[in-house]
Image (tube, rainbow, N blue to C red; front, side, top):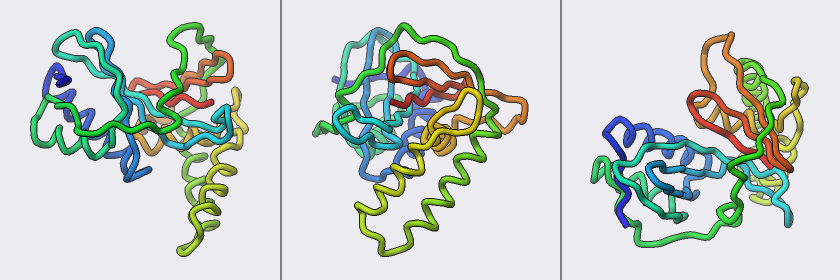
Length: 208
């Protein structure tokens, strides 16, 4: 099934978003969830651990489709960026699907309760500090297991903001380009059950 975005600007926005997600994990995946006239593009910023996927951080952007469609597939990021580069506003079916553990988890669509806001600038500081800590604590040659453990510890911590959010949320908002340069901008925070959703007018980051 071919997904058709409503216009070239939407296609460019999707390509930019997925390029940023690839910088986090070059071999990562994207879940393309189409419902009616909307395409939800999910990416993984920080993989969760354990049966409950504690520490999971997902990025989400939504895009208008040219026609109502129902589809839900998880595919390699590179397969989608390659197709967008060739076909403009269309995403032909990639030849393969993937099954990352996070792809089976669907945050609820309703029931979210507002719990406050956090300044963009504060979350940017948290993200940059965490990136530096990971870089210093995982020098070249570090084993993949050690690096994964370090990232889990750094991004699993809560910020000292009110309300507190996982540091991995700040990382996701920063690397996916969702934070704004305006010092007065604030990120809205909602929760439901074990999930926390942070949002700006540029996109969403959902943590568990």
